[in-house]
Image (tube, rainbow, N blue to C red):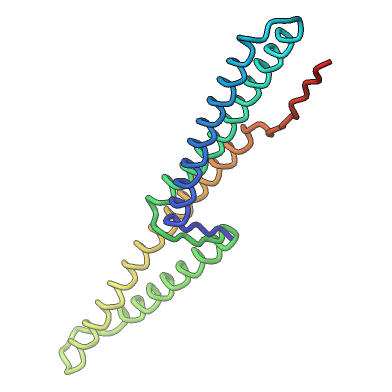
Length: 186
């Protein structure tokens, strides 16, 4: 069962943006401070430490990039689903039964219309105008059911396409592995 609350998702994305901005600032400050620390430290260990900082910065940048990619997927989900509405609930497993139920109603309306078509209207009687009005109402409802089926089918197709794209984007993500920073000064 798919449940999307676009307002809540937007709030989470905004909060995540704030956390990522803070993280990026802290990251830049940390590595600038560590780099500055090596300027006044001149011995054989300082070069080794500087190299370890460089590797750690590259790993931290990859981690940050990975977090941004995950946020981008949330943004993609928001952008796609917010076009459909604010709150979306859909069970793709029920697609055939929902469309089948609409088809069933449509076919029943067609059947009733066929019964109306069998009524002899070659001569006038009092009920003829009511019969024609009732038949027209059923014809209108049948047409609406046809439009509803097209709309529902289109929504299911859109949701299936979005889910396929999301699944593809998620499968492209790499797992985040965080290594500890170990530097032993002897």
